[in-house]
Length: 256
Image 1 (cartoon, helix red, strand yellow):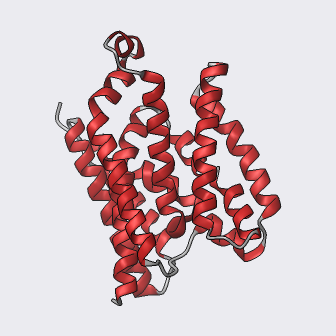
Image 2 (cartoon, helix red, strand yellow; image 1 turned 90 degrees about the vertical axis):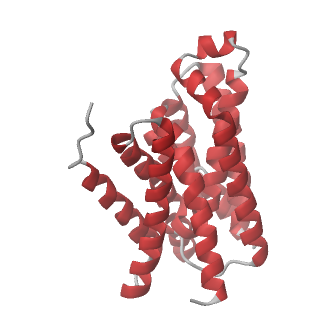
Image 3 (cartoon, rainbow, N blue to C red; image 1 turned 135 degrees about the horizontal axis):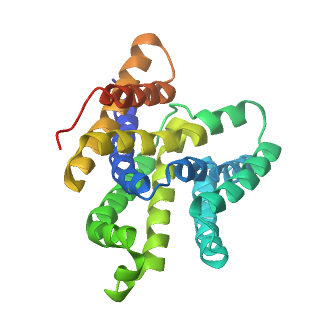
């Protein structure tokens, strides 16, 4: 492997760790479909910056953050479920993105690609992943309480609304980390599949974190190895590896 390949793999692995942790709470909050749809919100931002000939990642990140704040605000205002709100925003974003992005650029935005990563991207990506991981680990108890009973969380002094927004922002940052490699169609899958598998196998929250991270990392490494061995696309192969873990977990029965 070249230094560029190692840098790219390192960024993918840091993204996988963040995806494993964020995915655990996305699954527990029953955000599986919403989580996948949220990644599609990045598409208009990618299309816009491609027209302006700017680095697509920045447009995707800006759109994800803006979409996250919009979803959070609409959920509070309308009192609809987050699935419904994300579905509306996702549909509009996908339509706009399809109109302003075309041809090969649209394929790259949807499915991602390996590409070369700069030293700045590696540093920013690693720092962002570390920030997401730190937030989840620091706020895991509050997130669990807010998940079980928002009313109890409020009476305990936990700012539920701000915590929800912070989680959605952490989710958006995680999606942005993986867009270059997996695109808007597949990034949500790496967040959801390892966590869903871990939920089946784990007996505690800590073990769920560990299993989800291990599966996400193994999926990225497996996708990279299969891509190099068979000259295929690493992103889709990584998702297939993650899916194989999930279907394999169906044969496991946890005692108790």
